[in-house]
Length: 260
Length: 331
Image 1 (tube, rainbow over the protein chains, first blue to last red):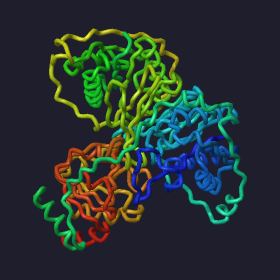
Image 2: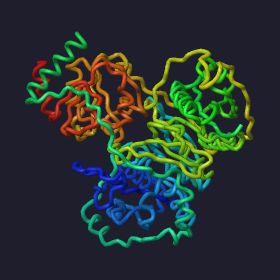
Image 3: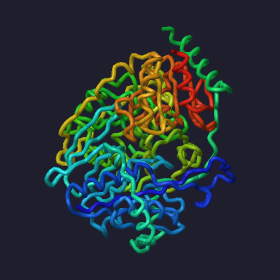
Image 4: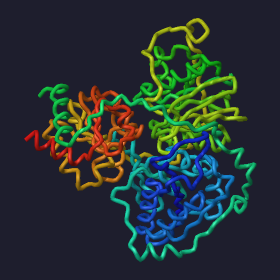
């Protein structure tokens, strides 16, 4: 089974970040980390390939050069190939643009299954997976907590609100967006990390996928007007003091609010 | 009808889900700002019954649209086809849906396929002379992004539960700018049979944990506890406090605690007397689940943690030092 895992290197603001003009911060100003839900997607994909005994996992990222670190981390954990799509016109790309690029890539690669993370830790839009499934007209399950092969189908657990779980059967090809994995995602060993450093990594521009800037602008779901700082409304009464005082004070509040 | 605001209600056990009230409230507010009349559609096997039962909650709604589904439970492709049919038949300018586990399966799909405007996890909307604007968090909720949707005839928005206030339902309240009137009721029959592309094999109800709903004190743990090895210690502290142990999303998704203990948008909602948050940063998905707590106490090493925005009391401290001290004092 060949699986495509789209991954995102999520950009986070450093603690001392100050917003200046309402525009997106430059990539150099951000701290980049592989999206944690995508790590779970990779874990799910690697598990499915291992249990089916054959196939490969292709990881793909739409992102600036900083995304290469995340792709290499995926290679170290067992992904077979990695590729990155980017040009600077994509700096403001939203989920629908990313989905358009990934759809073109999937048409080229023809995977049996696409496994995404349910959302990204920076934008939390949770939109790319469904948009991608829609464009490719694939059966899809969102908020997956586990998947296994049953003959030609997949049995997939979908995590509902309030702790309920729905088990679904879907045929392949299909798309899953992963919320959690039953176990902890694997860690790469040092040798694999070293090998991944020099592994080949394919780089594409949108034109390689027959997508031009005008078309991508047209598919964007929204336009950024401006970014702003959130109004902070801290009403918390803060206690300064050593743990012994903090603990005494917590115990006192609980005694008042919830007399035993 | 074309233009206006179409609310996509979710049915559950033959009734309108509570979350739909907030969508209607947001739609009414857009209507008051000039976005056009509000209609409410429900895609459900019992769509007629769901809408009939909702009559008292739909003041100001121009039209109720039942979209009967051939399937008893939610199915992403059926919902996708139904929403595409609704948009084609009614041409709404704005579609409001909940940012829920169900809508994650189809809303962005409809947007991508139809080249519609789209934004998810939206926390504020407004309609001005320049058109629709929507606000959502970005960069892990550190910043707020204001969006607009130039040249889009239809815009689909997934609204975050809890971010939009709900007024108490008022029977027969006048519609914005008009008299009270009964909404028109219509039915949209779509060829949805055969659209299903996943099959429900089983539905496992939540394992329960009645202690969480009963407990006056909840001890909530977050990513800051560092790993599964810290859980037994904190469980012990919870029992000393007479509290039930719950968690934000991170410890659940990392597999440190059972998912039945997850509090938040995709977990359960609680209203304890005291919520003691240890190592919880305060992601909005979690805060949505603890809004009903009487008193929130937060301990976090990060002075900028969002949890302090909603907490009544807070301390910037190491949670383990405080926990150890608390346990010692409780003897």
